Structure formats: structure tokens, C-alpha cells
Length: 348
Image (cartoon, rainbow, N blue to C red):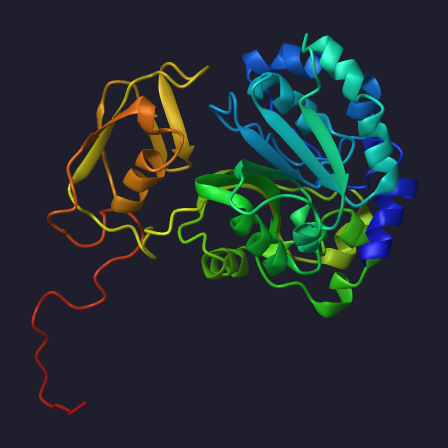
């Protein structure tokens, strides 16, 4: 499948309009502050863009970013404007034709953003084998990826490599395609469905369990949207399998717990994250308004306290008392709270 993917993205697809589904297309409107940055990116780079979401995380000025499956470099060049001259962006892709497009426009974007030196580099490599590239352990602040991990046959290896490269407190912020069930073997081997980012989609629950096993102990869903298949032949192949485009945050924080535990903690957002003065959205269930005391579980507290977001919050509480599972986190006491009587009985 790896060679099929190289051929599909290097030769078969020449521009985004060649795709047969909207799985690898970004439908959401970018925020206002990103529009002039995206407008400055070279037309050829835009034409070879196959992402399924916006993977431009908050507060990345001065950081070192790694883009897994960077393609023609659209997201890398956009992030180069956001990290500034003190930051850097590294794009990794295995497709020579895509890398050629990205590399010939490095100087163009350096000049466009007014930098003395280019802050973007591109490396050729496979995401399952990032250890073969000259990237030190614990050296990356944020890893992004845009609709590419589904194209990798060994997804566990990719997540393990990402965890190894991230600094403690670092984050993997990425969009990809997910399915509501495991893929039948016949579909998983279909080269067109695979290239269209469908048959390689992670079953969402397998993704959660795999991420946890690789060290990302509390995956956080940021946003999601259903994927439509307009090609009738491909739709017929997929049957009633449902696909979704989703963006997740994965934090490298060793102290995270398997569930959201309540320690009576809260945070207050200062409104100081760039471009987010009124609220900060950590994930789909945590839209934290500026100035308001916001109760959080222990894991959320650490995701804000032990990461680049710490200066932008005031923190209330400690770890002195545990109150059980955090209310509303989807895991409840499994036992009956009232005595059940019956005429019979049994031992264990």
C-alpha cells in the first residue's frame, strides 16, 4: 500500500480537484487572522493541498513544529508565519513529487513573510520510521498532521515515534479520518479507497486505545464532521460504514490518569492567548470563557498547567483531596446506590 500511496499522491493526483471524495478536503472557514496568511501561500502549493482540517494550533510563536505528512507544504508555510523567525517548522513526507513542490517555494515564502532566513525545512522519510531522520528525542514542541496517518499501515509506530520526539508537555494536534467500525479486509486493500483516505481510517475506539498505549493517556477530541462520498461507485463499496473528519489533541504528560478524576480544581483563563481574547477551546467539551472560574478535572488541569498554556491561566486548588470521577465525564459509579432485596441469594 505504501507504493500505491506514493503513486496516488505523486502521480495520479495533480491537484485537489482530482480527489473523488471530500475526505481529504477542508470545508471549514479559517479564522480571520489566518486568511491573509493563507492568501500569501503560493498557488501551486494550494493546488496540491489534500488536508481534512485546519491544524494550526494556538500559541506557537517561537516553537519548534513538526508536520507529519507535510505534502506540498501548505500547513508548514502557514505555521512558519505563526512561529516567527525565532521558531522553526520541519515537514516530513515520503512522496518526492510533493516534496519538490514544497522545496522550490521555501525562498518564496521566506520573502513573502519578510524573514532574513527561511525557518522551514523539508525531509523525506516514512512516518513509521522517524527514527531514521536526524531529529533528537524530546526536541519538538508541537507535532501536527493533516489527513495522513490514515495512509500509514502501522499507525501504532507513528504514534510511538511522535511521543518519542515530543518534549514533556508537548502536544500532538492533528486532523484525520475515522470510521465508526473496523474496516473489512477487502476494503482495506482497495488502493483507490486507501488513497482517498477512507479504507485506512482508524476505527475511533481502536485509535483511543492505541493512543493511550503509546503514552497519550487522555485523547481529547477538538472538533469533528461527517464525511460524504459523492462518488456512487466508492459509496457502494463502503456500504453503511460512516466516516468522520476529526481533530484531536494528544499531550505528552506522564502524570495523566486513564479517567477524568475530580480533585476540586478550577482554572481562570486570562484571555491572553493570541487571537483568543474571549475564550479558549481546549477541546469539544471545554470552551473556557475569559475571567470565569471554570471547574476542571485533574487531567484538564495538567493539560493547561504542564504545557505552553500555563502563563495564560490562574490555577485554583491542589491534589489534596479526591472526589471521585469528574461529573459529566462519561464514567459513572457502576454499582446500585440503593439496597436491592430478593428472595434468593448467591455467593460470589
